[in-house]
Image 1 (tube, rainbow, N blue to C red):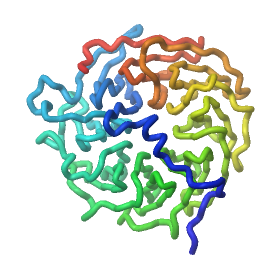
Image 2: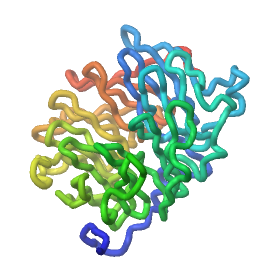
Image 3: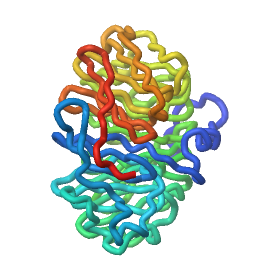
Image 4: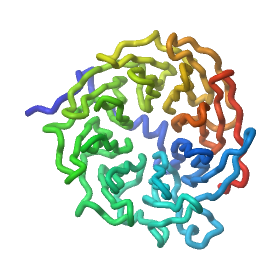
Length: 378
């Protein structure tokens, strides 16, 4: 049987120019998003360091711990360089994938490694990690820039498979576990479904797009949101990989969507923001909104009926999710740029910049305030 392919739009779009623009292997800087867990926020501050900070009254947060911590002997040998995948919080643990130091399970209370205990496990991994980890049934799954997919036991970091799975190109998107399957996207434009039970193929053939797939998100109803560098966004049936909707954006799409029921919202690299109703197909809710040509890499967030978009300016834009009307645009001065996804907590949206500065966007009055990070080590 032939591979299922997305409609051809011309020659295969290579992702090499995007590598230079977004991720330099010689100088990685990461784009892990702030993860909210009650009053705690886990933020990647610089060069793959992660800090657990507790939100205080007002616009401040106090650090409980930072990893790695140069003042601790065991951490001196750890150089993560960057962190691209969001940390995964599970009970009393924090799991994270670093660009060059491997994968870690940290104690949630003090940030100390539960494993590995000897510094790093990067030597067990072929390639760097440009995505995060997926946790399912006690197993962590992650892919590398060399096209290797690993499965490790979350309890102790030992391999759950005899050998990693090999793919023809690098894996930059964090794998997605949904139902009984694991979904793995590659920079050659392939999307594979594997059985969580034994790693065997769950689809007869992979889905193939005409551009790299660097992001992947599970939606309700057994569907997958698949953005591609070919300017298309696909909604797939996770059960068999068939295309339920194919929407062509105006520029490259490499971001996660904000989801509100059957509505999805996302931006592109040309500074356009889209709202789609995916009840049946992909019907535009309104003409694309503009963020004045600024690249949108960060995934948007929605609170109530207000969409919050952070671009590379960086500027935070508030948009009416029903009409597409731009409600306000708030520049963030001298803070680097924004590449990490915007996350929601306590009715606010949290924005993290490449300089490790954390901001809170208020959807009630369309304002943005910086949260002072007290005691964070960089």
